[in-house]
Image (tube, rainbow, N blue to C red; front, side, top):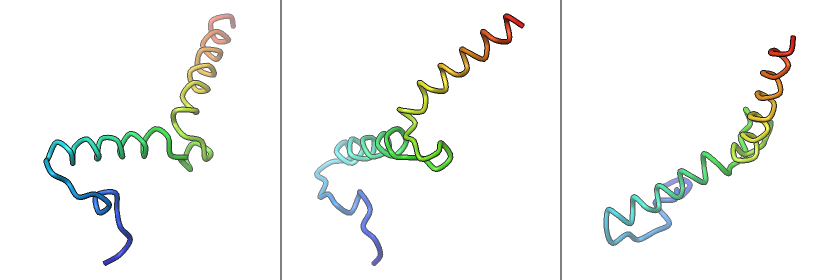
Length: 64
């Protein structure tokens, strides 16, 4: 049968419950899971660095 997924771990009583669990899983997967493309850093940690770097780059370009 393979590796269980998040959906396999619950016995749902309504479609709303399925949606809530799926939304929570998606948030965890997209925001808190380390991403290889970001050097193993979760997006929630990477985004402030990106904003700071982008702002600094913009200031440097304006002062040039």
